[in-house]
Amino acid sequence: MTTALVRRPGPRLAEGLVSHIERQSVDVELALRQWHGYVSALRATGWTIVEVEPADDCPDAVFVEDPVVVHRDVAVLARSGAPGRRAETAGVERAVRAAGYRVERITAPGTLDGGDVLKVGSTVYVGLSDRTNEAGAQQLAACLDATVVPVPVTKVLHLKSAVTALPDGTVIGHPPLVDDPAAFPDFLAVPEEAGAHVVVLGGRRVLLAASAPATASLLAERGLEPVVVDISEFEKLEGCVTCLSVRLR
Image 1: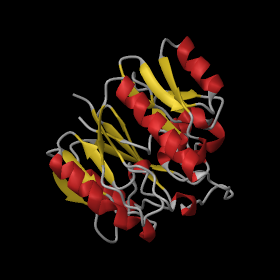
Image 2: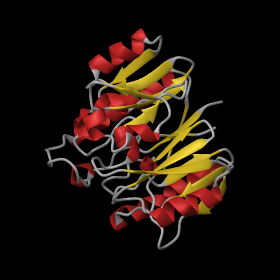
Image 3: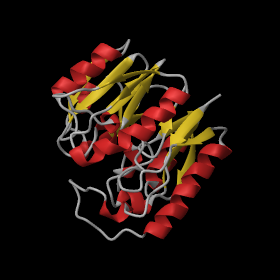
Image 4: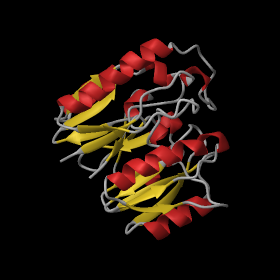
């Protein structure tokens, strides 16, 4: 069984943090409809949905991927470099404990956001960003049975704002926003920023944003089956398809 944790957007969503783009007006009602569309796309491709308890006082709580990293039987609770986001962790901890994970946590002086962690086979890339520091990356490495490779992230919010991976392990990214494409042994350039963000749904299916039509065509030419969702309101807050869910074992 494949399970995804999600958390619905709260009433303060429009107050969410932005750091690498200019703030835009967010339509909270539209965002909620888009979130339901995202969840429906996961369900339609065979995923079981578990909704994490709301955190309405936390504007960014919908980006449920950031408070935790799951790998095999362990869930590592993150400690965001944005102190205002640390209150999001409690509900996520309850959800991963209920799912049967062994829980570890990042502690001071370490900082880590789940959006900075990209798993490709037995390798875990960790972006060193405004949200994740070297101490956090080292603590994560101590918690995981995996090879952890730190990579620089200076042009976007998170590592997975710059790169994600296809089902065959190919790392994709939009070159102007990737600090070091050579850090990844098998790298494929995509023509749109939003095209760098995919969620592997199983088989040949990959979820990506409607704002990346050229990338969807490119992936289809490679034999993949793009599943497209509109997440425009979340993109205004530097969100993407990866950060709206946590995919469990």
